[in-house]
Image (cartoon, rainbow, N blue to C red):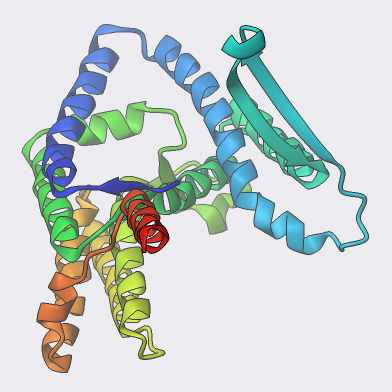
Length: 303
């Protein structure tokens, strides 16, 4: 079930992210980088295999025909016995899930042994997609608070200090997508990379996903706000790359992505006269919807 980010969560997020970032920076300064990255590699190997397996599951389901012998399995761990028995793990899966797990494990071993940029990017994309799927914003105001706070966070830690760049270069984990700049020269063995942090994908991504749901709520059979914000993201990313290559200096991507991702949809809403409606739009958490449904059912029974 998706985790809904509240306005309080959004306001605290940059502070928590700053503490985490600076903590990692101190770790790399105090402890051996080799041992830290070894632990992180094992940790992200497990997470990456699970994330990639989950991401691949719909694709594998489409590839294999209905005639494929797809047996169901159940992994069940309980604690205690009799009336005090309690379920710890109850996971159902099938043959297709096992295929996903095997393929993901192969990618994981490849990443663990070679740290190849393709394996890194496969895991990174899986993390990003799972992040957008699991994290939800329930209104545009919360999204603006989150993006605005991380805008300041990104600018400060990139331009104000060397912390962000140091951690990004020292942290050998698939928390970033890497793009080989010498691909044509060295092929798959390229080793000169430009980086894009997963936060620069996930944070704008959950905002764009919110605007897509807003489009659906309008019931106008159009995706105006989704397309405008998606194009804004591409524009902001392109501008980041352009400035980075022009000035030969690391750039905080959110410096360009945040104004674009917020500004473009707001301009569209102003033109269409739907700005108030956009900022009033709010999703009801699933728990509240269930409570409302139960309440309405009980009222019907009473009547």
